[in-house]
Length: 182
Ligand SMILES: [Zn+2]
Image 1: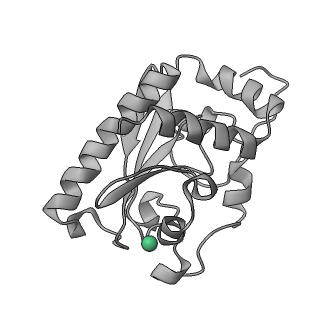
Image 2: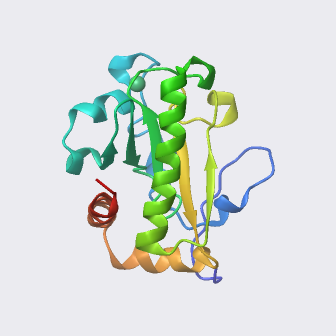
């Protein structure tokens, strides 16, 4: 990151991970509360609501039998996807064996697809379980698939400044959906 680029700071304690050094101005809206569910019910849940939207509108990449893949509206990096069960469950231990298997399989497929269209050098995979662990939407389990590139903290400002985010997200969704094996 070059010195003239603005940085986003949050108050708090802890050890920043490397994702914090990415240029992600669109996360400001999220941090300030926009689109945050009012409570943990299914009716307030974006992961439940997205299922009823069309793919383009909901940024859905792939719909499986028990789980689906959706782009993160506040991506850490281009192609940041999430794999979620259709059911409104919060905890990993609540998944059925079938859901567990499909969540894993779709995570693998998302990695393959993102790698094939973007040449990602690596990935951060993971689930934040509970608000205390950093889950933004704790009531509905979601597995993050975050592609990484060597030097991606330099790549992001270029994208952020030259394309509007909605267009980028729509393009990204189409790229991934088209590359997803049928
Ligand atoms: Zn839900």
